[in-house]
Length: 473
Image 1 (tube, rainbow, N blue to C red):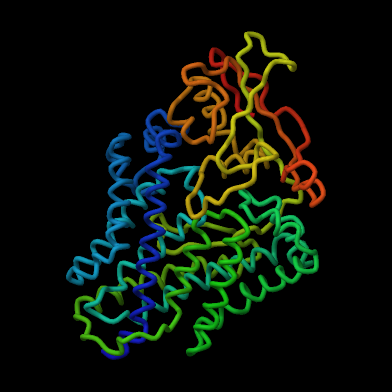
Image 2 (image 1 turned 180 degrees about the horizontal axis):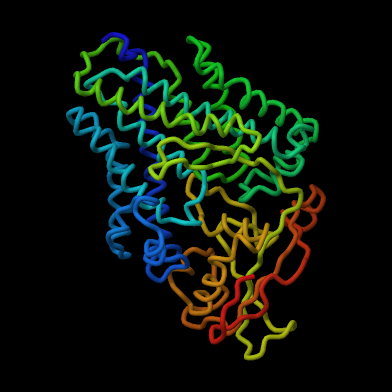
């Protein structure tokens, strides 16, 4: 069937698949290097405790049948190995059916992790990776030209990512309607990057232009994805440029990168392929059946987007096949940070020697310049940002974090940049204090060398020791 394939998208598919494999690789490496302290048998939110109360039908995962840290590690490293193979193009060397099964492996493994990941895997880009990864199973390899319907569905995901984010902004914080949100966003975002200070110090007029351009890109341009070429390519290219701007301005895990990946699928990139072998009948049936399922499931995110009570980053099915997205429906005006400190004194006093734990990505020492981590995701650092917004976000895990720091837990300490205490000599007490952070001015930066200025606000967690009950804030 000539209508079934789009020969002009051979190169677009190739770039899409290799880039998606790269995102998968980062996601699995993130899981492999962080899971023990977060989700392991002795982690802050252990998987075994979660699967005891949540049935398989609500959270399908191979860990529902059996869990061990060794099994989780094996799945994470297997996913990384398969992702690396896909990145190298191994799927192009296999028969079509085998290539599809190979793409199914990282999706199934990552689904198993997300569905038991609890708070640590509650971000929208987890569902976005799963939805995109499931669609990639049906894109085929060099045996067939890219299926039109799958390319259309990739644009449909991209449309929902951008348009949903645009709607939630217009319905949410009034500063988006007034074009003033970017007066604050670069300073108060979850994890600033090395250029965020400079973005924050741009003239306010340019911030208003940024906000207006964002509205155009998210509320108008997405409709152009479904127009004929070259308009669709121009629309996708504009989205890619916008995402690259966001990548420069902060650390948003792989959210921006996978949005770029989706936009690549809409580009008609000239290549030497203008025709290809006819697709096997079984492949056409499988692709059209999957497409029909995804179209049917799409009614729920459509209803959500049209609703005045629109929600962000919600999965409507346990397989994360079709989801709703959005980001920064509201923007904080003030940045708060939780600073964790410990002391070796037998009796904690205000004048005790309190030493500060340093996290990898979140602001701490005012003189330490933010670093670039994205697309790698520092899960604990991100949740510390939420904890500063409200202690309710920290309730399930903050006490466990303190407990493990007091116990000198090696896996937990590996999540941090530096512990102020020598190995084997943990503090006797730990406390947490809330500070207000703001970016310094140009003059303050020159005079002090500090990019942050912080002011003490209040006690977040009183001095706590291991022998007593560790109270959440």
